[in-house]
Amino acid sequence: MSDAFDLIVIGSGPGGYVCAIRAAQLGLKVACVEKRETLGGTCLNIGCIPSKALLQSSENFHEAAHSFADHGILIDSVKLDLERMMARKLEVVQANTKGVEFLFRKNKVTWLKGEGKILGAGRVSVSGTEYATKSIVIATGSESTPLPGVAVDETRIVTSTGALELSAVPKHMVVIGAGVIGLELGSVWSRLGAEVTVIEFLDRIVPTLDADVAKDFQRILEKQGLSFKLGSKVTKAETTDKGVTLTVEPAKGGEATTLDADIVLLAIGRRVFVDGLGLADAGVALDERGRVATDAHFATNVPGIFAIGDVRVGPMLAHKAEDEGMAVAEILAGQAGHVNYDAIPSVIYTWPEVSAVGKTEAELKSAGVAYTIGKFPFSANGRARAIGMTDGYVKILAEKTSDRLLGAQIIGADAGGLIAELVTAIEFGASSEDVARICHAHPTLSEAVKEAALAVEGRAIHI
Ligand code: FAD
Ligand code: NAI
Image (cartoon, rainbow, N blue to C red):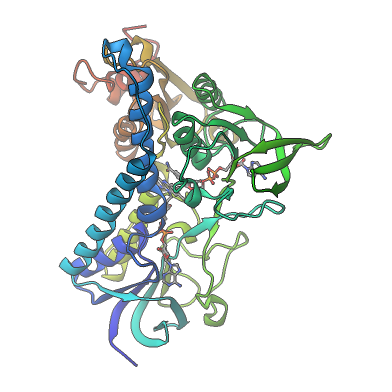
């Protein structure tokens, strides 16, 4: 038996590394097991960070090619250096993963390099060496969900990982799944010059958004050149030297057609990753959807073993994983860690961005909650006009009788930043009236949030 720890965290993604650092801050002796060459998990290595680097670079390219002239800036020709774009993405990733390594050293968290396996409560092996620990936190994250008949090779048929590494701009990219990954990475390659077709099983895009917001979002993306085949399913993919031929059928059944692509991006969701972790032998139970079953305090059925992040119930988001990491570390240190699942924002980093927090209209309807809507378009916001980003609006849902804020969705420039105000308001149990009475700087996009709050009672000023 090697060193003994108070806590061993398995997985160094946003859940795992934040948990390890917080527990160390609280005085625990902590190790974090990571089998990847670098820390930071899916998010920093092959997820949030590289995708946002490419979204920014591709947006800059698109702006230079298509929008600068509007501002009176004339450039003779805009050329793409994809190799440099990818190199920059790598630099951004490395700065972040090295940053986590630095934070581990600073907080005296031991990085146990290798594959972790749970041998039972209080016992973890890492590539053959056994360690004793009072508690174990499982934070092993998720992986792309496969689709029968569509074999991923990460060259022609790629997951998000391959789509972040393409060495040339595809002529025609077909994306399977009109969710967050499909639309973000579809946007990247569309802006860089690819024709992008998105195939979606349902008859709408992004099922987690309100139907009207999703429809408006789709219209904006179509204006940008993306095309959609809704209510369709891919049943087969045949790869040749030249590309991929997909067989596509109506989701409800019917005649099959074929579609040729040079790159196919499979993005139909992510599933829990617990391979090789030894959960069955350790007696750790999974829930009906294969996630690690936990109670409200992140505890599994085996005393001393906890789980956080993508492996357990809830949205597969980095900040949800981080907050659960903080909470479980605080619980293990004898404090009262807590996450408010009614106030977790989500952001799609397309341009414009789309953000959401709290309940959707569909959720409120099915719960029988009466609500009012306040909506304000960016086309009536002075700053949005000045920066030439007038697509979209702020939509606020408030409880009809109490006026308490229940949810919000925003399409627009910096929707991801703007949602923070409404997350705070929901966290503090604020009403739309509270938001409407807060002084917002002029001219800023945030005035649209105030105006949407005013619009709940029909008293927006600028519309
Ligand atoms: P992960 O980040 O998946 O980390 C798990 C780690 O555990 C991995 O490093 C893995 O190597 C390691 N591991 C697994 N098993 C073992 C083992 N047995 N031994 C040792 N190590 C092990 N979320 C957002 O909030 N915002 C975004 O913008 C965003 N963009 C995304 C873009 C893409 C392309 C993808 C794929 C995801 C994105 N996400 C985003 C989701 C986000 O990445 C995840 O929700 C988040 O990473 C989950 O964190 P986690 O700590 O649960 O697990
Ligand atoms: P997703 O769940 O967001 O979207 C998957 C889409 O595929 C859905 O619209 C679904 O109806 C559709 N679909 C399912 N099966 C299908 C099939 N057989 N054929 C066609 N369409 C099908 O999943 P996605 O985009 O893969 O992303 C996974 C997760 O990663 C996200 O849910 C999110 O949690 C996280 N993520 C978050 C990001 C962010 O916060 N900005 C960015 C990228 C990923």
